[in-house]
Length: 320
Image 1 (tube, rainbow, N blue to C red):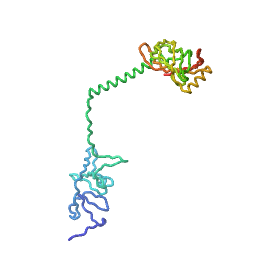
Image 2 (image 1 turned 180 degrees about the vertical axis):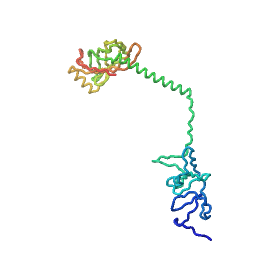
Image 3 (image 1 turned 90 degrees about the vertical axis):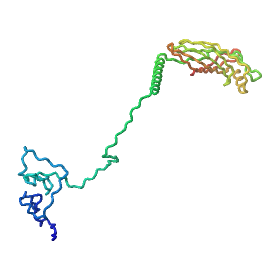
Image 4 (image 1 turned 60 degrees about the horizontal axis):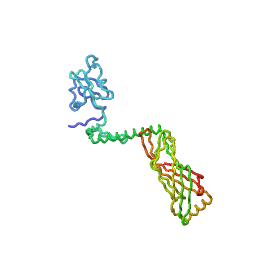
């Protein structure tokens, strides 16, 4: 006949639990010799072996724990959890029981502040083997190095030479001018004769200057009336050179405005002209460094009326 199980712990009888008598209202009393006389329905099967490792027995040098109560061998807070009974039955060794709690879950990748962390090892990185540099690459690199070394060394040499010699530009000037003749043929064709004394000055103290190409143009109110080529010349340090330049104008057509202005200036005795020069110069620094450059001279001067016209006023500027 089926008997209902009592659920109230106060009415449950003391039963044998793994060879011990357990009283719900009191502590464990210890092993009982007549534990086998407990009815079968109150007996419980022993728990399975724990997969966790069991603490080893204490060494003989330490005092035996057989005289200690069974309740003191259990870890704190374990309640009435059973201990492990040794083979002789005289000593009880507490078994390591895993703490109660929620079932263990399989770890999964987590993130912290947007960063993904994985518990699985990352695959190894495959680093490509280093490639050998070809001969063409070495040749190009050597050429680039030589080019930049040449540029740097050349710049340093040029800077040193410039600081040592301090070269200055030569100057073009008009020392004197004489207007021999100037008249209008048929009322609008200009015929004139003028002689200029051109001065070429070298202001450098350590450098000679050579004028390899010289051309002088003569203008009246922006109209070209004469042009002359001058033979090359050389000017020494802190020196100058004078050249007579004969400017001849023949049948130069003038507008009515130019004719009126020329007649008015001849009556007043102050005729204004312009002289523009184009100079190709060459300088030698230190006897080995030679360089050429262009110079442009511009002079504005005033002469008196012919046939004995002389220089009255002048203004000259030389630019590169």
